[in-house]
Image (cartoon, rainbow, N blue to C red):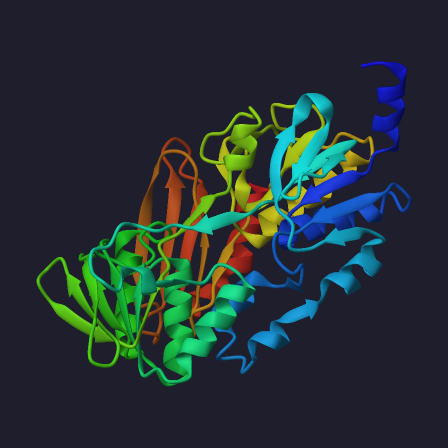
Length: 393
């Protein structure tokens, strides 16, 4: 690089791609440390700031979609002393030139680039003439479309009984909709709860009038007289006015992969959020920090604070603490700390007088120390004591 190019690089802005929680949080944290360096944030949508987790309980909170956004792009730009470019797509990254090429052909140089591109809703192939009508709710625009469909809706079928599927099911039932929850696993929340706790969780959902269809998958969806006819793998048929897919998220990695960055389950970074290319960082749902994607709010907040330090010239590794996942299901409140390593679950159900109260502890295979837990219903009151024991031990 010649002297002119070096000066151009020094004068270039920090660029953040993505205006979700990850992108805006790292911008906010960095501005606490650097008030003057130019900042450009690129959004492929309208750049509104909102809490994505609030989408799955907005009905219970009696909030319209328009009430979920705290600030528009103009307000965020003012707060962050940044330029927020909305409805723009990054066509490609040119790492050797420290540059982005946008959808209109414009080239934008950067001194540091942060990829906070999020994730897409996973979709599986489904047969039938109504397969393209299956909705996904992955952002506020999706949610606005979903709420519009609910106006004339009596029944909803949800594909996927994971965290988001269960939260949406609870929220819809609370608003008076009939809900069917379909999942190939034998218990809901199968990736978070041990089997016995999952069975208790399922019984609580049934008690809340949620129609659980577990151990089956959707074979086809066709148009019916009013809504849709679903054919399940066990031969059963199910009618619904609206069908929603909530089977998980796939990190958006295409932009990074096409630029030659290392990609695995997500965009590969080290503990400093650094990708395989100089001055390019990643965090949030798109990033596999030290080999693991952590698509939860607390993880994003910790990563954003560390990355802000790195952008300010103070390299700081992300040290993730024990981070509980709180599941917003009023039918049976739950909190989980997912364990790492080898060990076994010990589950106790029916604690006290609460039929759904369950305590499941994951004990390390070598030491017997608690390395994770799942608490349901009244047992969630034990969260603070367990977290203290895990962190002090």
